[in-house]
Structures are given as structure tokens and as C-alpha cells.
Length: 525
Image (tube, rainbow, N blue to C red; front, side, top):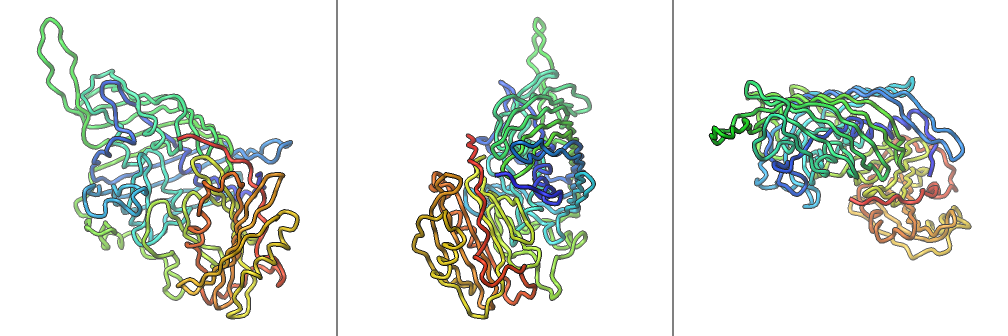
């Protein structure tokens, strides 16, 4: 489905793409000394202060329709990160953060700075990690780092901001496990390359690393290569040129006067610096425009100062250390604006601009429209577009006038007249937080394809209400599973909200009819 976007909407759609992938980088692997991939245990990395700079220039490319030329806009971005990173004990209690499949806790971080400024055309936007989100945990699923809060949730913008290439928790996996000679090269496994590049898959090509020289107990390694992969189900092409530095120590060779052996060196300890220039060409996807960019990324790591304290609790870095660089984000009456709760990887938080609802959701749900008419998200799983969701605030209802299944069915039959051919029995649930949840499923046709809709009305006793409409092709029903229920579990309506929702009329249907998504693009991991 093509969605017309303003520059402001482009900023939101592409922010994560450029922050997460415009600086994709990777490094090599050898037949005799292969670095670890997803199946290898993560290497313990050293505690360090990490500084990352990321500068991007190029063009953003957005399709505008079948018969119209794509819109191209110049884009520039500068991002800066400065944080202390402490390795988490992999065998410690709670080392698996959240569900087992969510990944293994590998690091604790305290950010001094995490900011990005992006200019698209003449429009500039700035994103920063909020003061109350400076202490983070990092889990690792395979070769994918996942930052999260222990007792709250990052916003989608914050999650995207922190999704940078060459994440520090992956760097030591680049090193070969056996001693190497000057001039020796190796390739990086595809899964590790994908993790370093913040992309979904590597389809072809490799990044090669080569020991250029060893001096003063330090090895200089050059990296280069071309990779074709996929992100959100669409192709991306990346070329990489760069270098890295790491401590090295000589390994005694077997003496043989007749056949002298070249010196061999063990690469060990902290990778102190990674510097990469890359060019990427990516097609537009279901959830973001395409782009052609050149990116420069620099990662520098230095020994962590002893003054930084680390606790054994989930919050990690000491309160004193955090207080030195941040406060807490609270509302006018001292109520935290950020959604609180037991955090975990792959869960992010969204707050509607007027505070009419907020939502904690799976990161597979990607925001594509956000404005006065509501929030539209798409569910993308392993490159396939599975469905779409629209969430809209409804006009204030009289207090305690809670909706029923009959009310919702009547509105559905009116708003989807001609499309719905069957309405299933519904549900009414009064949740522990006081919200009434009314659910109704239906099926029919849209765009000459069989579709299923799932409709919700969520209502509070003070009269605030929201409509949630999900739709997906009938062919993906098994894969869509209960994605609607987990989404609704994370939805909240602030009781006593004072800001009136946009005027829609008292007899308006429960929410917008979601437009038909384009066909799913399958991708194999």
C-alpha cells in the first residue's frame, strides 16, 4: 500500500532506518581462525567508555505511485553517543532477560549522551535519549543487540536511535580464535555481518578482514567488502571500507632453520577503535522510504574509569553516576510520563501526542502514520507484511456508558458495508485496570482478496474511548496468530484526560477503515 507522506512523516519513518542501518559495517572471518556467529557463545567484552560518531549524507527516495516518479530529497544526519558499558555476568541470576527467546542479558550501560540531528530537505528534526532512560540493559539474541529499560519502556524513537552499527557488545566477536600472521585475512560469518550492519539477512557477498601490520603490541586490521542483503523484506546493497585496532601479542614459533616460520600474533583484549566508510543503496519497504547514502562511523573505546560504580541490581550503574548527567522525565504533577513496568527486549512505548492513549507494543509493529486522525502501524515479521492496525481516539462518551458487542457490530456493518460478509461472535471483558474491552472479528473482501478484520473498542469509566481496527489477508491468519491480543494488552487510556479528541461526530463509526496493505514480501532467514 502506498502512503502519501509529508516531510514530517518521512522523518519518523526513516529515522530508525538511517539510525539503524545507514552506517552498516562488518568485518571478516578465516578458514583457520573463524570468529563467532549466532551459534557461538558471546565473548566477554571489556568494561569501557564508548564514544560513537555517525555522519550520513545522501538522498531519501520515496515512491509516490505506480505512474509517478519517486520523490528524492537530500538527507543529512549526525549522531553522537557517549556511554559507560559494563559487561553483565552471563552466568548470573537473571541473565536471561524476559522470555527466553528475548535474548541473554550481556551488558549494562549508562549514557552521558545519545543524540541525533537529521535534515531532510529544509526540515530538521532532533532526537535524544530522555533523561530517565540513560540507564539501560542490553540483551543479545543471536547477533542482534537489544537495549531496554529494567523498569520501564523505551519509546520507538529511542529504540531506533540506539540501534547503531558495530554495536560494542559484538566487537570482540570479530577477532579470530587462533593466532594470525601479518597479511592473513578471514571472512566474517553472515549472521555476525547482519548483526553488525543492523540488517535482517545477508544474501550474498562477504566482508573480509586482513591484518595490515603489528607494531607496539597493537594490530591494525583493514576491512572491506560488498554485501547484498535484506531489511524488512527489501534488498539493500552495502559496500564497506574501514579499519580497526586491537591489542596483539606475539606467539613463539617453532624454530626451524631450514624453513623459518613468519611471526604469529594473538589478537586479544579490547578493540579500541573502528573506523568505517560505507555506501548503501536500499529500496523502499512497506514501512520506510528507500535511500542512497554515504555514511562514516567511528567507534572509540577506552578503559572505564574506576569512579563509575556498578550495582548487582537490574539498574546497574549507580544512582550517583546517573544523577550527574540526567534527571527524570515527569509531568506537571510529578507523574512519570514514561510508561512504567517490567521492561524487556523487543517492547517499546508510544504515547499519543495529546495523551489520549499510550501503548506498549512489540517492535514488529512499525509506525507509518501518526497524526490527528490516529495512529497507523504495520506488522512486519522476518520481512513479511502480516497486517495493519489503526488506533483512533473516539469522542468522549457519558461516564459509565460502556460499549457493548451489539454497539460494535452495528458500527462495523455500517462502516464496512459491502466488504464484510460475515461477523463472528464477539467478546466483552472488564479488565483489572477498569477498562472495558469489546472485541469482534469479521471477514470479507478488499481489493478482490479475502481479508479478516478484528475490531476493538476500549473504554474507560470516565467516558474516554479508543477504537482499534486490525486487518490482514486471510492467508496469513496462522502467522498473525494472536498479535491483536498482545497489542491490546499494552493499550492504556489515561483516566480523567482533559484534552478533547478530534471532532468526529457523535454518530461516527468506531474507527477508520484500514486501507488494504500490499501483498506480503517473504524473506528467509
